[in-house]
Amino acid sequence: REIALSVTVSGYTSRPCETDSTPFVTAANTTTRRGVIALSRDLVRRYTPGAPFNFGDVVHLNGIGDFVVEDVMAGRWERHADIWFESLDEARLFGRRRAVLTGPYGPGDAYQASQRGVAQVASGRGGAAP
Picture: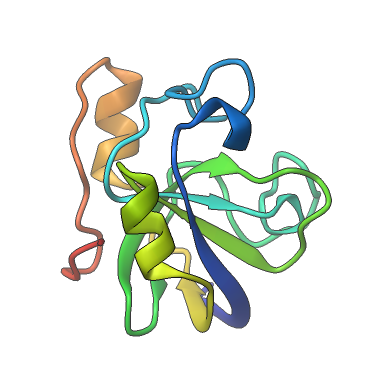
């Protein structure tokens, strides 16, 4: 069942000050790469029963692109999405904005491939992730 909700969107990197002790490994045990998104824990079923999304779901951020849910944010955040960027400059350039998050659209190819140890970037519904 597709849902749509308004979220705050920001960017993050794999800098140790922004992550846990494994900065290049997501909560879904995949490797960070373009197309990965972290959601606040209130939006991920593993952390909040009844939440709308699972790891591996493809989601769409209106006006931004499609992403695979593979990471979560610190517990203090709610209704928030964090897009992974390779550099701090890219994340800062993206900034913070509001967007409509829609999905889920089923397991993403990147998540399934990474579970087999092959890193790929899923394009989801055809949009390109930043």
